[in-house]
Every structure is written in structure tokens, then in C-alpha cells.
Image: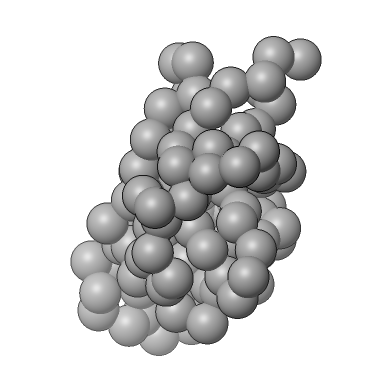
Length: 121
């Protein structure tokens, strides 16, 4: 594994995501409470970027299909709820899910050294 600097603490605001790079990996960094966390900027549903998704109460929502993930763990907490912000009925959710089961987004442990934030990839 390689330790890569992803941001400085001053770059990261509470309840907002910061899109950054860790090598070739696009990563979202956030501050939830007093902790910093990071997940891949790639929704596991269709691989679309999540950086323009809403972060609220530690949950990031994919802006394309409404999948929801805990930003501190990557755990899936809602799967394909909407399309482009429009809520879907249950049959529409099943169609849009295309048979894919809920999947967690890749997450990374964030370490802090002074004002610098790092992940291992």
C-alpha cells in the first residue's frame, strides 16, 4: 500500500465533500463530526461520479440514481431511489437497479498528520 496525501484539514468543510485524487483514484473527502473520512468517487450502481451528490447527516446521495451511502464507512443505506432527483415507485426502482444488488462504495481510512490528510491505496 502507498500512503498518499489527499487534502489539508483547511480544505475540508463539515457537511460538504471535497473531490480530490489519490494517484489515479478519484476520492471524496468529508468531515463528519470531528472525523475525516474518504470514499471512492464512483457509485457502485453504474460507476457514475458522486461528487455533486448531497451530503447530509453523514450520508452521501448519488445525484444520478439516489443510492445512499454512509460516507464514513461506505456502507449502502439506500439503493436506487430516484432518477435525476425524481423519486421512483417500487417497480421503477427495480427496473433502474437492473438486477444489481445493493453494494457498498469503496472507503478509505483517513490518517491525519498535523494539517495533512492521508489515505493508503
